[in-house]
Length: 346
Ligand code: ATP
Image (cartoon, rainbow, N blue to C red):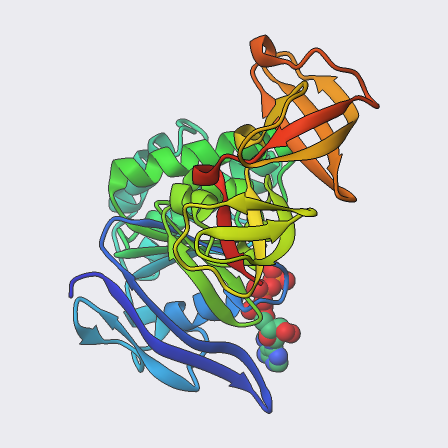
């Protein structure tokens, strides 16, 4: 197949396995985020793709060619590390053109490439400035421009935005995504920030303890997390432990609920998004459990209602016009619509 294939990659350090059997197909032009908590093996996987670490097992293929043994500098990949690794004694232009210089390109070619790349990362006219005089966000763009100087066929970035403050970071996420769309270059970014992954990725690869738990588009990871770990890590959901209670039914929170999932494990976790939970002021009905309101806050565009259901806090988010006319302490009827109930293996 065309694109990048990770064929059952393994990385061991002595008796410790940092990456177990990673299998993944990445078509050309995809923006991929390797997402997971610290130590889950994201960087190790990226470094194997880059050719900086040799796999202990498995193969890496690009357009069906086996590159597992190809040295890093012969892979035609661009890479940006968290540290950026810019040369402080060189100007911006010299930094960007460095890969061209070591390949013996002329001064004019270097200059033209630096100008072209600087406009690409929206920093025209700074080629002659010392790199030490730039802000964090600007340095970020210079590192990106330098990694793109040789028109790589794969663009790899390890936590590229983690040193930036929240606001700049969000702006750079959008810029990086736009740049990738413009160039159409297959891009793999390591991040531990689920919002960052959801913003940028076409394909989110969720990892834990050296294993790939799910590789899917962001909406699918959000809507259909593969298991309770993924749901919890992606966040923004209510998780309730429960058990199977016959065909299409589960027992949770002291009652039973109908679910539309066909596969129901004996021990399960129910995941339901805050925007799918409905709070009724009173009454009984299908798929409802009694609850007690603990907190309400008006967020302007939405209203958040927290309620305790069988000792567990459930968060519901509604449009202001559907705000229930209740206050903290009120007894309410909490609806878990069957089609919004996602049943996960523990
Ligand atoms: P972080 O977000 O903290 O960088 P990560 O998901 O990128 O985490 P890795 O850096 O890939 O995680 O590390 C995965 C595991 O492999 C960790 O337990 C780490 O301690 C271990 N590890 C990584 N490199 C080595 C090494 N050279 N020798 C021994 N163990 C290593």
